[in-house]
Structure formats: C-alpha cells, structure tokens
Image (cartoon, rainbow, N blue to C red; front, side, top):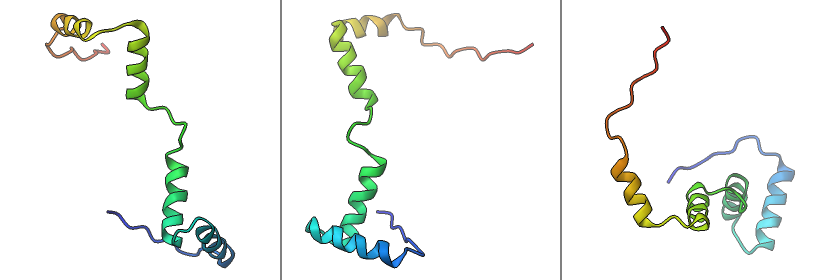
Amino acid sequence: MPAVTIRNLADETHRALKVRAAQNNRSTEAEMRAILDAAVRPQGRLRLGTALAEMSRRIGLTNADVEVLEQRRDTKPAEPLRFE
C-alpha cells in the first residue's frame, strides 16, 4: 500500500488533527486517512456503473435485449478518421 509524507505541516494543524482524531476515537494517522478518503471519494459521487444499471432497469432493458444487441454488433475494427 502506498505511503504519503506530508512536510511543513503547521503545528496548529497537527494539534487540530490530534484533537479531531481523539474525538473520533482514532489515531492521528487513521484520522488523516479518513479525511483524505472523504475528500477524494465523497458519498454523493456519481458511480457510472450504478447509474447505467439503474437507467437500464428504468427503461426495462433485459439480458435478452443485450444479447440481441451483441449479436448485431459489428465486430470489425473501426476505420480511423481521415483529414484529407
């Protein structure tokens, strides 16, 4: 698992992290992981696979429909665009 080093962290910030960690019954390191995780992976983020599955259920798409589409799909590679 990757490790991260944070340099030049203000003393006040480090103290605030330690207080926040204690309030949440976590180590300072665990608190920093929780903060970073919440910042880059928010609860309300769009999950594309979930959104597509929900949309297909809403319109009534079935596995049989997908199989028909796969049978009719052109399997040869697409021709690249030409700008001539």
